[in-house]
Length: 392
Image (cartoon, rainbow, N blue to C red):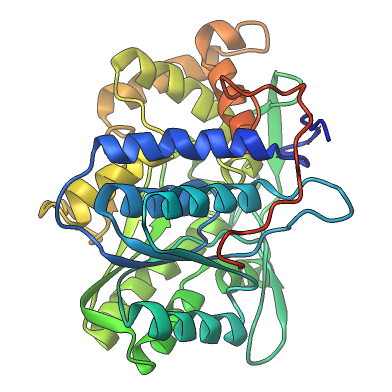
């Protein structure tokens, strides 16, 4: 079938299999160009199909020749309709890894469940023996507690007071004001249950109890801090509260299992998750223009190459006062933030394209779903029912 983008709000409900493969191949080339000795060799990536999780898997495999097991929850093609972008990304990754002679298998299912943890452990025992890096990169709107069966839902809200600031309607290209009412205590609690560190701890306990964590194993989970203008809805809001719980979990995991567990604070990039956060798309559009002009702009893959090569395995962790790895360091440089802050009050719908890189934001957004990639014929008939090479 011929697949075209169909966008609803901050989500594209179609994905292009050839375009997704082209994007994955682009990232593979970046990882290969930065290849170095050392690094992880047997890697479990929980949340491996999009964004930073996918890029970490690519950086480990093609930058360090690592065997990788990916866990994700994606939609395969059904009734002739395209699969999700994450499904096509994973198909493309496995295909490329197998071509390169690398071990790559995947598990598609609810990573919060005991069943998927058990399947992952069984596969590690059979194929890898142990893993030396565990990446936790889940971003889900809901989580069902595997013991109680209770389902929790996360929300993006400020805490304590209503937040009003500028935002960007990415469909219409319009700058406007948005007001978000504060979360109540139940919403705060539920968001921590979904996006906090509890499930990361459960994974590490299950892996440790099964004896599949290698001596000297490292583990990393991802976070974001950003500039003060986004703090009310992110860092000091419900999601920020959940991320603080991830930091608590990192310390608990390090102590309980004798491993190095870290939170990596990453740069603002266009992902399915970041697109949903009010204020953030406008900030990203301005940030991209500033960083591209300075020459230090990075996407997901460049960030993850730097995380593995320079920080986790390069002997230069550069932990901050909260013992977090900061690969958002270039974004948060004072001159970068000053340039963004100068533009922020001046930007309008009329001067959006002149004062920001909104076109770059739109391009990155389309590429998340396999659209807008050079060399891809989007008028061609493509096969949408693609199986995972490893069987999934």
